[in-house]
Image 1 (cartoon, rainbow, N blue to C red):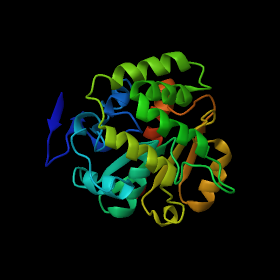
Image 2 (cartoon, helix red, strand yellow; image 1 turned 90 degrees about the vertical axis):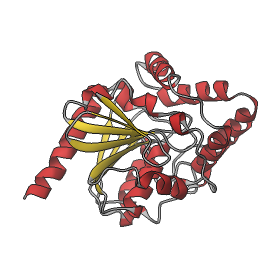
Image 3 (tube, one colour; image 1 turned 45 degrees about the vertical axis):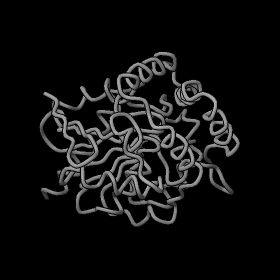
Image 4 (cartoon, rainbow, N blue to C red; image 1 turned 90 degrees about the horizontal axis):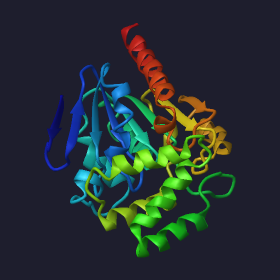
Length: 269
């Protein structure tokens, strides 16, 4: 049984019973991206999905300025007490901000195919700046085509790339289209947000999950992230790309189960 909450302004959706898990999606997406994955979890957890401001059911709410801080501020009051926040890609930036902003609300943080800084820089592997600039230029002309290209890059390398793209596309289009402003500013966040100085201060138990074939968050950067945030657990799925919960849902669910079990064993001891 799914319940819909308009709790203040942002719409949230909750399904299942048990320990609270909250999912935040990536750029250009909405909570529909998790539709096929959530059944792997909802027998054991109470799962809440929140469309980021400007996307999906929250397309009408676009904070200004539009950055990871303002998105985290918008989402924080919608978090259930003592939850684990799972942020995919751009949602992982917001999730990391939430872990710093409201550590008392979180019992854990999971980032999937995410990083403290997406854009490549000196000694920092990431997305090439010119690729992001190209996306920004294309976005002006055609949102759908830009999203298609972004999806293709996300699935690249996965053996099931074609099915993965089709699944995400079908799931995401069940929700309202994003606000143009959120698309532009969200892309800008991928170019400008830099949390490298901050992630070492995250005190909640953290799991960072990556796909070895991911071209947006390259594995060559994982060691750097480990140096900045050594307290975090790191898992790399060898055959996954940027959306492991789509290409390898059972493996991803098992990794989440183990992480959750570890957190609650620690709490009990």
